[in-house]
Image 1 (cartoon, one colour):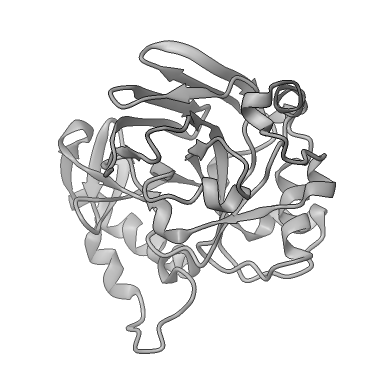
Image 2 (cartoon, rainbow, N blue to C red; image 1 turned 180 degrees about the vertical axis):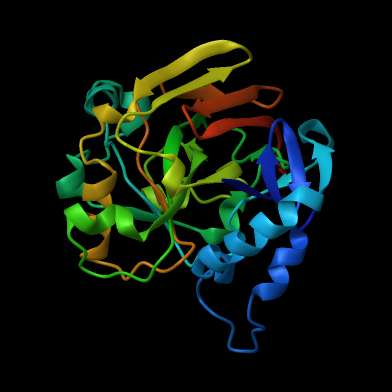
Length: 287
């Protein structure tokens, strides 16, 4: 099932090129008072919501995909966890190019560890990437994103897929420079997610997905998740050795070789096999 959020909080299912409005299913979610949950309640109750969605679909209002504005498919991730240099060729690419590493220490992912991106950087396909730091270079990075569906800590790799709610296409936009990754990757709009979430039951093997990224029609990144240094199972297990993961947490799995700069006016199209295609415009940011 392809589940989306659209038009400022409506809930939809993508079917045959249309968005079926199943917002009524949100009534199932528990009411929340202060202090609010630190996780996403839709992802926590996804199985129950899907059961209601199945009953609503036959009579749901249908809208054409190009007539809706896509919000991030996960509204309230507790945290955004990301994997650096998790493709061998990208690791080699970064090590060999001073414009990418800026004398930062670059290590194999198991030595470098993971990093966190600010939740305030998250947008959906309906918003543009607002170019930050005009005097600096901003690069595109396409990534498979794992959406966590269950609370988990110290999980084993062989059990890791059992905690996955689904998958989405992500862009980890990056300012090049000497600062820590979390700072350079966390400006407003620098985490793009969407256009929808594909539930885990539709992806037999997250380690065998083709992914591509093009800028203004020219392909720049093309790889397969089979090239990941740490695969999805291993990444989830690695993350839970340090963090408790909660429903709605996002795990960006890393980007392949081919990263490159974008400027205002560019259009980015990122796609992942069996997951979807994410399109976003780059615009000038506030000075």
